[in-house]
Image (spheres, one colour):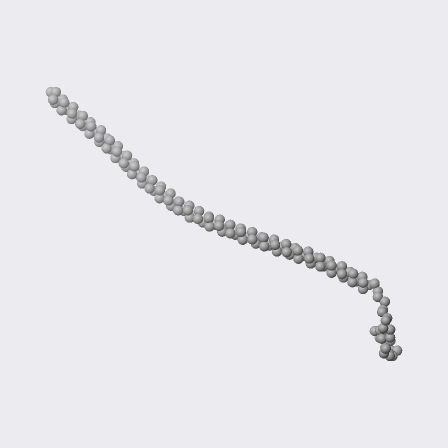
Length: 145
């Protein structure tokens, strides 16, 4: 053991030099503080685990929503393409209908003209028959006289 002067005795840690087996009394405060800190650490660890689980759930949900969004965008694009095709087909059909209407109008005019010609031919045929009948009656009348 080292020899210490009396003035060193009042210094912190001096008792360890003279009495190596000396242990200062431990108060209950550090134990309570330690217990409180351990409880807080346990709570924080539990909160951290819960937040990690929530983060994982949010990540999974985000991935599911991203997939649904991608699927919805694909469906929207397909519908958009179908709509464009339908519009093109409708435009083509409209042109076809307009052309057919024009053709029907021309055919109707042609049919009306042919019907008028047929009526004229019928009238001429009837007039021709009347003329023949008259000529035949005249010939018959001349031969009678």
